[in-house]
Amino acid sequence: MFNLILFGPPGCGKGTQSDKLVEKYGLVHLSTGNLLRQEIKDKTPLGLEAKSFIDKGQLVPDEVVIGMVDSYFDQHKEAKGFLFDGFPRTVAQAKALDKLLELKKTEIGKVLILSVDEEELIKRLVLRGKTSGRSDDADENVQRNRQAVYKKETLPVADYYTKSKKVGTVDGMGDIEAIFERLSSQIDKKIKQ
Ligand code: AMP
Image 1 (tube, rainbow, N blue to C red):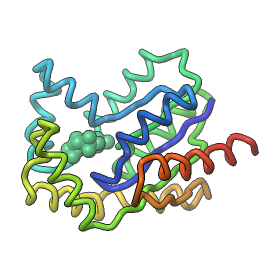
Image 2: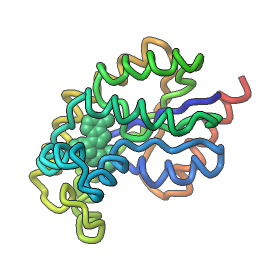
Image 3: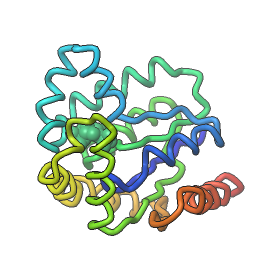
Image 4: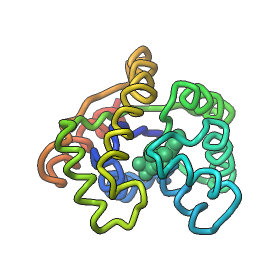
């Protein structure tokens, strides 16, 4: 099993690149943001709880997200590997993920960080807000809050994985295909090891 974390700030292109990577490497895409938006669409109690956090650009509580990931694993027992997109976003989530993977007798193979300038991120998100229909995209203040939450709560997750020497950084500026090539070459190197 090969498990990959695609890591980076809101707007860095994780979603776009994840779609391409899961197709190329036959992984199951686990995007907690997509799962939460589906819960909101289905008007489930979990979705209703999550919406108030998402709309303010805050993180949904760890226990809610971890529970959701756990049941996603149960639904994908045959997966030959997962691509984690937007998860883990806190050190507590990273530790919970390690435990869940240990139960499945596997682990994280690689963490790839997409690096993009902050002003470019805000520009991309405001632009995306014009067409995505996402309630957390349209407002520039919410965008700035999401970047601040990323620095405070999510960046420590990169340190957590750096200790285990699994982290690679990829330049996330420029053309979608060029970024995809950079990501693929790091994954290929890891798979061949
Ligand atoms: P995303 O689509 O990954 O940008 O996520 C959109 C929003 O969903 C985030 O701003 C958070 O409010 C929430 N969210 C997604 N994934 C997580 C997570 N792993 N932990 C906490 N909140 C999350």
